[in-house]
Amino acid sequence: MVAKKVIRMGHPTLRKEAQKVDPSEIASQEFKEILVDLYDTMKSEGGIGIAAPQVNISKQICLIELPENNERYGHLSSSPLFIMVNPVITIVDKTLQGFWEGCLSVPGLRGFVERPKAVQIDYLDENGISQKIIAENFLATVFQHELDHLFGKLYIDRITDLTKLSYTEEFAEFNGAKKEDSLDE
Image 1 (tube, one colour):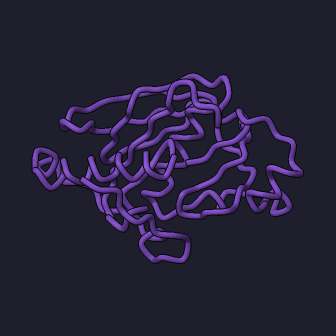
Image 2: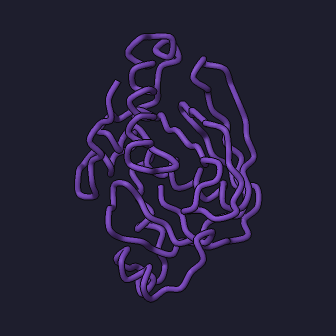
């Protein structure tokens, strides 16, 4: 398969709620090709997550994988590859935590976003089997960031203090934040 073009902020697909995937589609060759294309795109862009709307496919599908030994994220733990279809998110711990977020669809910018510390996600996996995960801390933020794409939201919509929105280069030069306080989708 091949990496797809990531659409950017301003494209209307990013602002629409994506369509639920009919479970009967999950066994199709077309669905499997979408998953491979999403994975290839995420890897070629150096991201840790991607949602189907980001490649102009309006379906509730997203992938998340925190790689091992990644210098971008410092000492943070890796994760397996999560393939999520039709995810439903529930807040488990409303305590807010903040990270500097970046996004493949909003290139060149970073913003400080506070999100709930723990969430539960119920979803179908790539085989159509119901799954549930409780994500905490940084991983909870990654899940919330990716799932936002399925509902027409971007991280910039979640910034409460616009003085904490920065170009990537200036962020690196002047912010002084630790790598582990930063999320690049």
